Amino acid sequence: MVLIRRIFILPVLIIIALTIIFIFSRLNQPEVEVIKPADSPENPDRGFFMGVLPVPGDGQSFEEAYSQAAQYCEFTPVWGRPTPFYSLAGELSGSWGREFLDRNIRGNGMFPLIHVSFIGPNVTLVAPPSMKNATLNSPAWREAYKQAVLDVVKSSRPLYLSIGNEVNRWYENHGKADNNPNGFQHFVSLYEEIYDAVKRLSPETKVFCTFAREIVSENREADLTVLSMFNPGKMDLLVFTSYPYAVHGINRPSDIPDDYYSEALRYMPGKLFGFSELGWPSMEAFGGEQAQADFIIQIVGRLTRERGINLHLLGWAWLHDLNENDYIGLIKRNGEEKLAYATWKNISGLIR
Image 1: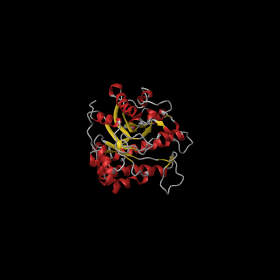
Image 2: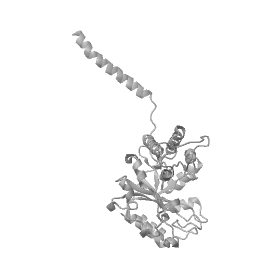
Image 3: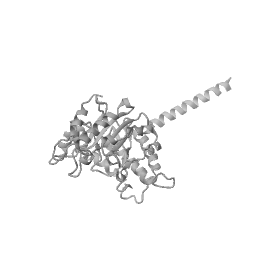
């Protein structure tokens, strides 16, 4: 009988001991930092958020441009000055961040779409000055990029975070060969690693990377098969930049195929869809101001829930033309509003 009691008591004592060890180990562990985004915008009646980069017009301050943009926009992209990824968190937490992030964007009732990018001029890798000959598969570089993204999340608390801009330009330029240290597959694995780390830090942040719909420098569409390299479960939104007039043979909005954007959803069906940058010029060669306005109408008309597309972000490239040779702005540099701006304002009040 004594032996039987010992047989039953021993496992119970072991369980109790293990439970005590587990409790003490949990108590001695540092608490995991969890961040809540600073932005909580209500979805507009039209069904999607509208945004623009508030490039000032002639004689206009940044403060005035952001205030003007906020009248018909809910978000604006944030790049820093622009700033390399390893310095962006410092910019966002310093005087620049207080001026633009706190006062000009959030102070005007908008939310930021934070961009972090690893691609430099001529599709080269951006790296800290001390890091020589870095590649996409360099452990030190990967850790630096990952930590920079996490620092950006801590300093800006974004609701929307792009951790790579027009990333498929790298794919188009460098490919995905197994023996290539700069093969695009190395970014894909790093992206998914960073996605998990950001979600642990800020579970409500919507994480994605941004794709280019066109390879503008080559006047052609981008290869959308690159989307198949990503796990759709780790892409909260499917976001593009798009300047379709740059594609050979597209000279008017009516030249754009009906499935030009919806084709991407073959790789990520049901995904929230958006544009961080979208543009059509008002120059006569591409149909003038009327074509620019028509393009905006077509985009909104084509990307509807009835057509199986859940448009979430509609971001125009910039508010004013950049200079006398640029015609993509909704407003001329002298402050004269184009037809496209009237269309933009009308759509901002639409109920979808």
